[in-house]
Length: 286
Length: 314
Image (cartoon, rainbow over all chains, first blue to last red; front, side, top):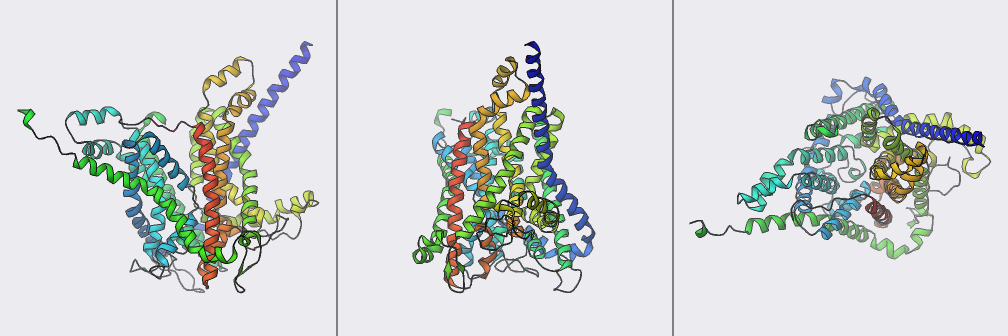
């Protein structure tokens, strides 16, 4: 009797250990793709990154070499355009959710923002195509920037709200007690206190949309040359990677790997910056 | 003296409140804008094809016959494959991270998963074309064929680009989000639950199963549904590995096509109005489905996580 019980006990312990090992294994499998993608990016991309890559325009088919400088600059221009739309709307909307409104209405808005975050990015491309490209008869940097900017709105809205809620009430009360108007309190005291967090949220959103390709396919469209006019098609790094990746030319494949490596390094740099900013804000969570 | 001072103007306060309210309302506006634009863009196609659009499978731009069934099928099957792979892995990882892992390992692991989430879809697709597909074609696919070739799912020639490859790449894309949301859910399980189970002499796994997982069931389901929402709309990586052939085939080795990838591939090629309208309608279908799935996910998650309704200032 006793031994049977002991057997059972051992079996339960073994089972527990097995499941623990299983969960550990699944964790390894989850991060494995990250390691593999990184490894191959370095192996295939590093050799094609050179001075030309950052200074030259793409060469025509058949000519070796060339670079992606127009795509890198194009992506930065698109991010700037997107920020003009996404940042003010997202930040001020987040302020509203944190500072004003009724609990019920705000929870509704939060809910809609979360649902909006789940809308496939290609949908934004289609919508902006209908809104801008069809209307103004042409692909343009403006259209691409708008598509990316709209994606930014719910992202920034939610992060801004969260960091503003972290500002202690004492700050607001102190400012209000001095007779400062509510809106000035919010702008100069609350938002200033939360500024690092707000900037972090904006950076996260930029890192996210910087790699977006789908919404740019038929808005920004891509361009093999410099864009001198924002109402004309513009190149973007992710678009260029896509075009090169599905092309049949080996040299273009090499360029695609190089472009991918540059894009990933850019995105990770922003993420590291974010981590540094958040660490300073809340050292206790580290 | 102070009593004589004019009361401060409330105009600034009101204006600021209205301004921020306007910006917050933009999110509602955006939902309607998407719906309206997609419906407007596809109105003629909806009238012309009606319900047949969803149930027929001829996609012939030249004859102007458009049936979206193969794309709907491809989207559902690839997402289902992705969920089957991603669900156990991400929930297992979430359990490992919250219940079992030594403390020092948790933060680095979480950071790595966040980095995986940060990899753009197009780069994963690039890796998929040049690394994953050749590997799948040479090793796992022949094995699958050898051992499961008797089922209809693993028959026929192996090209590499296939429904299965599409499902696998989507799985990689949704692993991080399901993992991090599941982790949040598991973290919100009160410690009292665990302590009570431990006090009854349960082993670690038993505590996790009885006290944690069953408590968090609904939330974990929400996390998986959220992952499904992302899977349905995944575009670039899938487009690059799924083969882009509109067909309905039982074998997962055969190429497929999804709603999102047909838009990505054919939108700029749409030469006729009806063609463009049909693609808009595909966008509408995709939007409708993802909105519903996301609504369900948020409702499930809402009951679990404490979204801070505590207001900063009352």
